[in-house]
Amino acid sequence: MTTTASAHATRRDFLYVATGAVAAAGAAAAVWPLISQMNPDASTIAAGAPIDVDLAPIADGQMIKVFWRGKPIFVRHRTEKEIKEAENVQLSELRDPQADSTRVKEGHASWLIVYGNCTHLGCIPLGNQGPYGGWFCPCHGSVFDTSGRIRSGPAPTNLPIPPYTFVSDTTIKIG
Image (cartoon, rainbow, N blue to C red):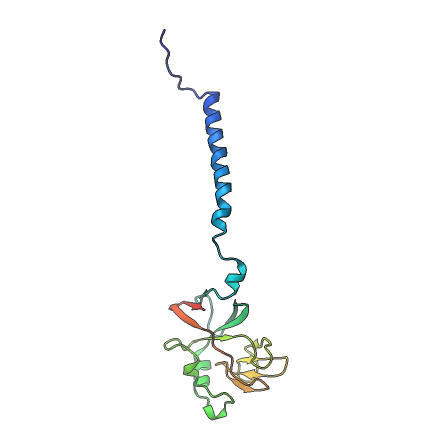
């Protein structure tokens, strides 16, 4: 007597496929925590991992706030008028004299990146405020111009510049 193989699926075939699927899902569930633990935890990331900021959606005259190392960073896309006003300030008028050109990267004068804490007591100043159109700290009255330089009030120094580089014309890396 001769037998021929059946082309129809049998119950045994279904059990093999189902067992294989359950074994694959179990293996993935066992390996997932091992791979996941290789990622840095939130405290490590907050401690200073560099961040990339896309500048493309920021319009002229607009400012955004991002956080790096738990501190606010102001990214301001300055207008031509703001740049000219900042460049034309006499350094002798400033409490903390610093030329506008030293506060921006060469070739990128329209982008000002500064820490977002007032240098008096660490408050967060309001953007596009005050007589110079820069920042105004409502807590104690410090006034900063569009280059982040102190113009009046109790703040002793200019808004500091964080470490950053231009990755491309539309992206910066802070940190």
